[in-house]
View 1 (cartoon, helix red, strand yellow):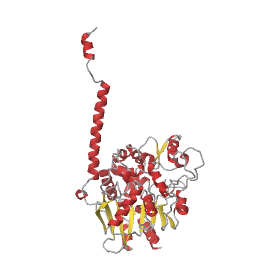
View 2 (cartoon, helix red, strand yellow; view 1 turned 30 degrees about the vertical axis):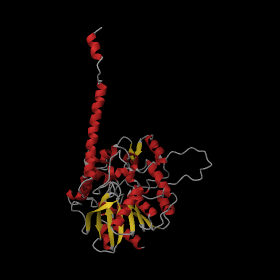
View 3 (cartoon, one colour; view 1 turned 120 degrees about the vertical axis):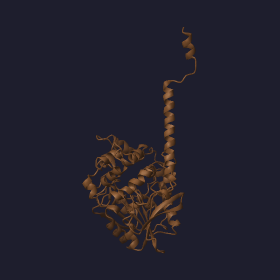
View 4 (spheres, one colour; view 1 turned 90 degrees about the horizontal axis):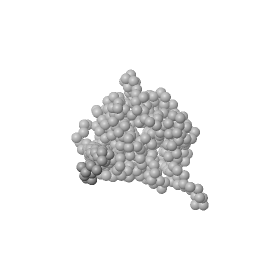
Length: 429
């Protein structure tokens, strides 16, 4: 017997595996701490220290300012038509990945028609502060009812008991819809853009005498079915809810400016393959007919997906609806904040958050409503049936459906003159 060996082995020791785990845990802890410091810097930024907003591209008559004490936020807004008191207000709500800046081209025409036009950076975006984008944090502040509370708080802070219209684009569309459902006395009309609102999620009905098991959410099954296709796919909203999505886009290999150029190009009318059509059902095989910015290849992130459709230098130079200077506004703002603030919204579109909206089951939009989208926007049809339900069931005072030539998803930027005309026609009709 080797007594020296026995004596050595009898002492407490740390295995190589445990040592590696300990080092890994310490590194992870340091990384988490660094990320928390970055997040704190983002959400507590003194915007007064930032460069002037808009990279000298804001139209004349549009100003940028901060409105404080809005449901816990210091909200950055763009305004036009603010010089004259007693004007009716129009509230413009952007989507993802956008900013108040996305409305810059329609604000002057609406103001020239006599309105006070207000567009905020919504919770999680741009120069609005007071939100937390921690992936493991509390998502409750990003629930749709709280986003409605943000819009209501801003309206009140600006001295209005009601607004002439709330206009929502992309994810701003369901927020605008619920503004009209929850407080029709405040939001006296609603214009929905790109994303149709097919109604609040329904409650199970007349089930007391049945013994059928609960049905899994349709989205869960679709995600599984998409992954089983011969060309495995995934839904972009499924991807947006993952921990990896923000880092993939924020730290895109091609750089954030090129990432955003490709993303905006891919979903615009400039990408000539955007020729949407009605899908027959909410099935994997039907959804897979949409472009990969909606139904992605299973193994790719959004950075890799849009890189394949990066426009040429000639296409970029000829893009007048989004110049390099204008694109730089988005690249700077999202380069500073990342995308997680906006991605939190998508994480509140399932589970208990969808169930919460069932409290509005059966409620309709009973104020005047209209819809505007680019004719080349797949957003019209991405949720089969919603486009039709919006016009026939979800809204009781439907005014008009407008599909704009020469525009894809970014309709208010691609064709601002026509969008302005349609909004004024709606407001004056």
